[in-house]
Picture 1 (tube, one colour):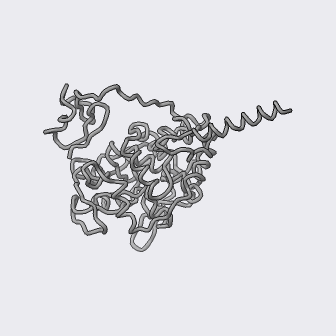
Picture 2 (cartoon, rainbow, N blue to C red; picture 1 turned 90 degrees about the vertical axis):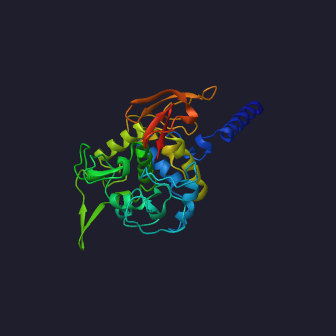
Picture 3 (cartoon, rainbow, N blue to C red; picture 1 turned 45 degrees about the vertical axis):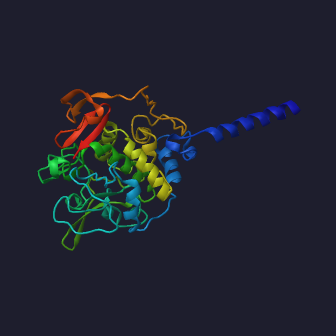
Length: 345
């Protein structure tokens, strides 16, 4: 009997030690432990229970929060709607007449969709600083892809026009390729964190004093907690997340949001997690200690100093140049340098 007790005690100790040393990605520790072993719809609900409790910010708090969450390496505001801005941080908004006049607080998921309700209204995960004029042109249109026949921001950085995505032919706003995955992961977060709310959300377009509520089959929301989004929307978001993987910018922002608001975006911490909730891997279970995608990060033994430079379309414009001077003299645009994307403004 004493031997059995000793074995039981040893096993219990090993479990406790394993839990103590187990760590999730990006210094998240045991934050996601409650989601262990879940998959598909159950995984989404488990994540919702983890990330839903968070500090509710005041709307004016966002100006200060952006200084931590959206600061570029040069200290300026990281604008995801315009590639031509270089804003210094401010403590209140101002008026605009054209692109480049000022930035404001953008609900990347338009606030009218959830009727201006809290805590969604000030959830820092989906609120970003964005050029005021471009933000105004975006209005409350869904994200999508288009030819930009209604509007293009400077350098065609973002566009507004009729959807070219199968399943929806309304007007959509298309962000730059560099940030499509960012916004997709934000939308996955919103559907997860607010799965108790999202079934009642709709896109409302105001026509005079009448609210015209669209609930067609191609609308953004499915009217339920899961899958939450209509099929065309899910197809688009899953593709964007795949084509624009998690960047260091997103990781840094996720950590900064956690410091301020007290919750995280699991779709940033676990690249590809969306496939386990909505995609082709719903039969696989989640482990918070592992990257669910099986993606491994290879760290080079030494810093690469000589690189090739490509446009975002894959056209080589420079070969074998010094990495530190690779962007010098380039026209405005997005370039692939080594294994990273750079925006020349």
